[in-house]
Amino acid sequence: MDNVFIHLGTCNTCKKIWQQLGAKAQKKLTQRELKSAPLKPGEVDALKKLAGSYEALFSRRSQQIKKLGLDVKSFGEKDFRKYILEHYSFLKRPVVVVDGNIFIGNAKAAVDGAKAAL
Image 1 (tube, helix red, strand yellow):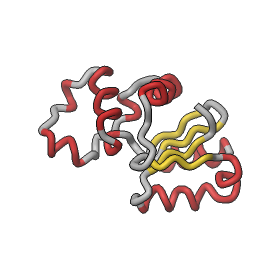
Image 2 (cartoon, helix red, strand yellow):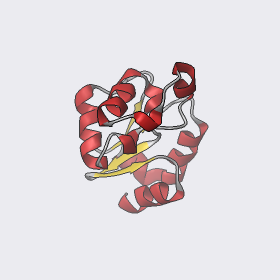
Image 3 (cartoon, helix red, strand yellow):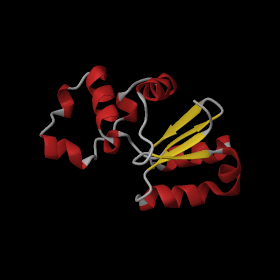
């Protein structure tokens, strides 16, 4: 997957991180808004290859988990992939891909890693 910043347009945390990444990110990364441009199966698989697992891409904070009554503890990799493809909120955001490296979520280490990679 090319250099990309995958985010949700309504997410203030994603907006804040985009600003923190600064001008380098704006020159190097393509923004991909999840709600208006959902990920295709091949794209999710490419992200998994970079991340090491679908579980690493899965947001355990998605409100859909409670809404659907899901038992995430019993999930296998196929389940994580299925739900990421089913609803955009199951993807941990933002996802930043820079030169074949992936940074997932809003943890300081992920944001700092993305900044360093840029």
